[in-house]
Length: 327
Image (tube, rainbow, N blue to C red; front, top):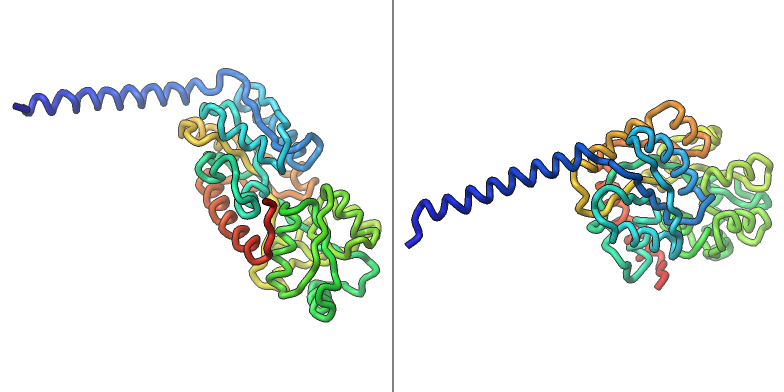
């Protein structure tokens, strides 16, 4: 016969276990970090992701009082490095410098070695930057309106360059042409620099380009800038309007943020987010981001999680309508 006492004993043990677990978790958070942290950049050294990591990592290490080691693990457009972090112990010592390509992969790949949302714990959104819509100067196009009119008058007569099949620059332009209702043939190049040169040389006519790389070529006349892709003008090219002034609601941004493996203790996530949010709002860090065409963002993990969720859904729709698939 089961008595009330028999029911109480397991409840007591469960309570003691939960209290002990809470103490252990709290202690873990209080002692974190006690050894170096690895920040995985899933792209080769020298690219925009590495630039962001190099800006943030030294200050991050000082605040955490531990060295933050940048580990470039490139391959498969960032998937190799991301998989490494997804499978790492969820202890806060292996982090991922994720880019906007992270939310495009579920749209362009039939399968991935991880669940883009469930395999990671959002930590902090660091910085975002706009794209710059550029054309070859030989075209009789000086504005977004001109480009749309030209595209409608010459269906299939334009080609747009991108830095890779299914990458952010191709997807951003796909969103533009779908919104504008024009047909433009894509040409994928091996990287953004090669794509920009192709437009400057007339091999392709138009591109949605990373603003940092495009501005110098606009300034020296090799490219003509038409507009930026955010909701407000960009300080790098303040004279140019936004695409949304012609196509209301249009927005396409490149962003960089920090993810941890799913299951990382909430106390660790909170500590990391607090320090990163402070870092990105320091004047000298904001200035360095501005110098590369970026705008410091910050905010809580929940904001970053919402962005990831919404962006995955958006780019899936774009890829479906544009017929963009890698496998």
